[in-house]
Image 1: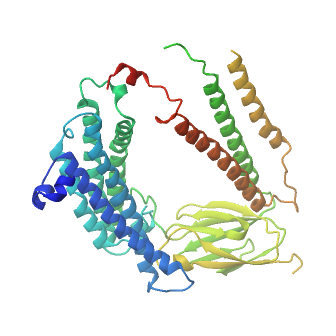
Image 2: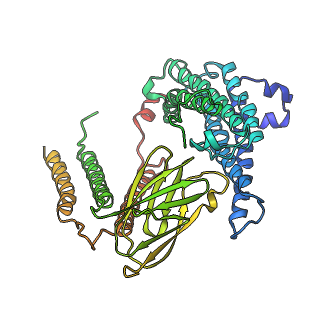
Image 3: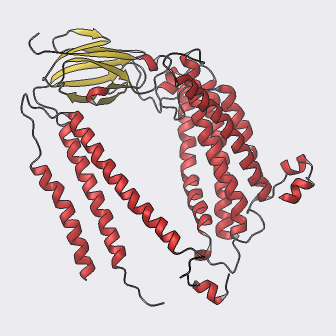
Length: 228
Length: 143
Length: 87
């Protein structure tokens, strides 16, 4: 890392790299950037709530949008990519292998995050980061909600691809002299959380799709009644 | 690799199970007490909509934004919503129940103090959710 | 055998206490309704006490274990892996 800083490779070579350390560092740098962006939103909320009455945020809809994007960013754009980045960097080292099982898939999973983040941040939806229906279906205004849904769908796919990578790497690419019981605990924790992600994110994506089609009015899956 | 005695682990398992049994039974008991609606509770229909509360008493009296009740009497709220999710909350009496469109949720209370208490919405419902409020007026039984 | 007996004794005592409590719990007659505020907040205080006690015990145990079994402890003995020289 020190040598890298003294004589760095050209930036396009780092960004196009599929090596697990480069992808891991890109995950970490992007997620920390989003940590600061979400943190700015949190500071805006705190500044507004410091005294009674309106201070810096003019209307309630802006405030609602700020806490929604703050929550979404902190969970989906900081927490999950940061964990993926730490995993990408350390798991191959822990199991004594040269890279992840699918390096190009790894890079694809990372590069899905900036477009998804752009969708979420350009949309600035207002229905809180858990998008509770019926508000998110019948009352959330404008294209913001649909952009949020698509952004999260893309992030979901990215997480699943990363999870597949982790599971195959840890189970199939560990050093031949290393028995499964000798795999380090941190690698085990990445394995179990990747298994959970593998099962949970497709469910999440299905729920997002149901929400989207309900919003467009082509289905009545979430809202099985008509509000009077 | 000899067998080591594991009485400590079994004690730990026993303590954990006992703790969970105690916590579970205390919580179950509290829920039993709090959910048992008295027979003579007067029914008040509560309807939430964007962004205000309306109330209807048994005798047909309707109120908007204000609720007048008598101290010492039991009241049962039948709560629903007209559009999106809201949550009916009288903070001082720990009354908290979601208002879900298409469904009626029930909660009861018996006010013990005379006075005015705030009612607020506790489920994000859009633009004026932060100000979707009301007032509970608890009056003497004699009036 | 003694450990199983001990386990069941602990369980029996700590399960019977709330059941006995429940049998003598306050009922409701007209004019004397259960004050839900009191019931709920009391449960909250008791659960908080339990939670912080359990938290202190568990985290205190972990801290003691990490301190006692650190590599630089004067009484530290090598692990089987370090003795054999594998990994």
